[in-house]
Image (cartoon, rainbow, N blue to C red):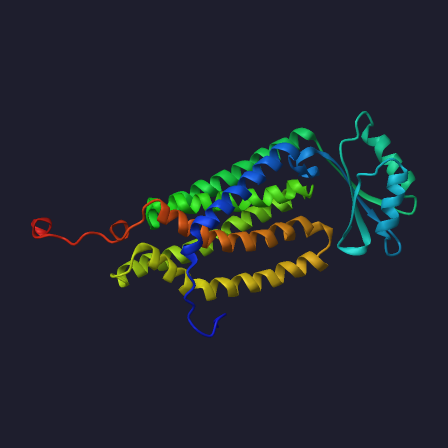
Length: 305
């Protein structure tokens, strides 16, 4: 199944200088926003208390938020869990309050709710989760660099890693700019975006390597252009179908997967862009040539025992 009815001939690489400036500016803006605002970390990273409550009737989440705000918990996160009768209430660090006193206040604020369970996450545990999450990102990037270098060529490896840093950096910048909560689910979405973007990049790189062997008279720029156009239909079809599923999560999935779906929406768009204009264009800027991908023919001297 093809996205376009005919083969496209778009000069993607003709705009590579403009898109390079755009990518640099957006990346710098993301870094500046992250330095100023930081990330709005969720309870998974900061520590806090999570209450699982049950109601005999369908819970009114808006009313619960008002009740908790009146009880001096304006930052409480209230979300449905599983069905309309079960609710999760998340609170940040309670300061000098003991867990027993905090639980008592929650029961008083929500008298109709039945307490099912209480889960406490200490700040030290949250810090360890944050460090482990950062290490997971680093390992993913290093593993990607080794894989691309072994399968293709080091210029492709450098281009792919820069592309994969570019994508999560922009996602984190958007989360920081709009103060969207960043928790373990959002971190999982960032790792998912890295894998998604890598898949697009490998498809393009594989076609570039194949076309260097087939199109002997074309320049590297023309070959990368041809390769992107040949894989464009597949890339857009994959992005379109994935976006449909993610949009469904965003609109009907509820607050639990809100951060995940936002990161995925950004990641699908940026990942498709970066596989063309960051990975492909950077490989050209690093001096990619036919000799880098096609081994020289053997001479009579090489064939002697």
